[in-house]
Length: 57
Image 1 (cartoon, rainbow, N blue to C red):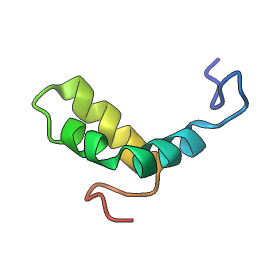
Image 2: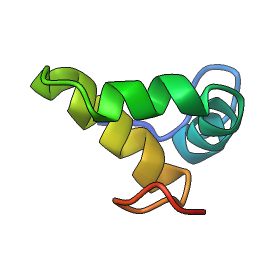
Image 3: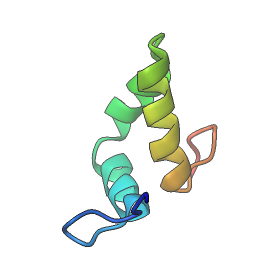
Image 4: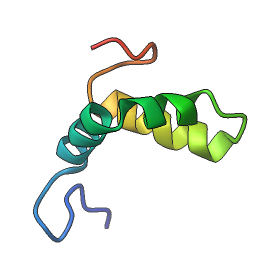
C-alpha cells in the first residue's frame, strides 16, 4: 500500500512545500518542460505545496 510519508516521517506535502519554497525556479522550469514526466512531477509538487496550477501562493 502507498505511504504518504517517508522513512524520516516527513509527509509528501511537507517535502513539496519545502522544495517549492527553496527551489521554486527549478520547479517552474520543470513545469514548463516539454518532457511530460518533468511536467507531471512539477505539477504534483506545486499542487501539494498549495500553489494550484498557476504557481500562485
